[in-house]
Image (cartoon, rainbow, N blue to C red; front, side):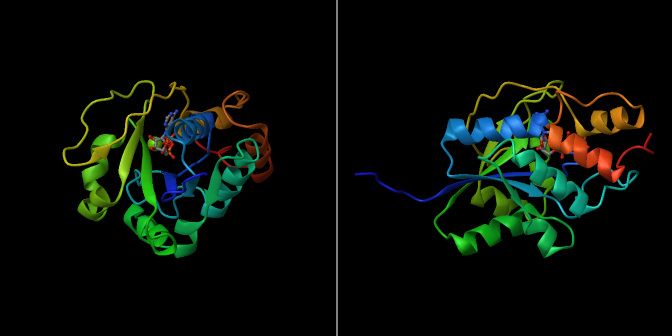
Amino acid sequence: MPVTGPARIGIFGGTFDPVHLGHLRAAESVRRRLGLDRMLLVVANDPWQKDARRTVSPAEDRYAMVVAAARDFPGLEPSRLEIDRGGPSYTIDTVTELRVSDPTAELVLVVGADIVSELPTWHDAEALRDAVVVAVVQRPGAEDGARPAGWRFVPVPVEPFDVSSTDLRRRVASREPLVGLVPAGVIRCIERSGLYVAEG
Ligand code: ATP
Ligand code: MG
């Protein structure tokens, strides 16, 4: 007889400006390797820690790209939690909302190796630290060191995939192809919306 324990939910947050195969492959690998019941792609409404020198694309455009991308990855669920909440996006608020709908869920926060050392700077970091386990995914060029003390980490080997949203925005502006770096549906979104054409 199958035994059902608490749900295990992955939270993969990002600006996703635009979403790319680095995000998608990492999220899908973590979901499979850890046998998670759900893996949420949580689109930040206002990524308050991003460099203020560049204006982030509208949240609805970024969400539409994640929805298009998820058609190729049925195990990944686009989440509007942070967009619908509005204001600055604090992961602790997302965690609290998920807990309200499922108090016993085990929450796995997925972060790239480039930002793991910043976790203690996140809003209400101590509450977040106590509420989640963290899966760190490797990123080419990012050292996989400097894990902050006191956080619980779950090892999960994921094959690195070398792509960043910054490079994709540059590619669009300089009319270079995106094929092989983002799903075809995302390329169509970018072409239709005209995003990134005037950047750089
Ligand atoms: P930007 O260049 O604008 O910072 P990005 O590619 O880093 O964009 P984000 O939306 O900033 O994408 O990242 C969201 C999350 O995805 C972060 O935890 C980040 O570390 C992770 N991530 C981004 N790209 C990759 C990748 N190629 N492989 C693994 N994780 C990634
Ligand atoms: Mg980034």
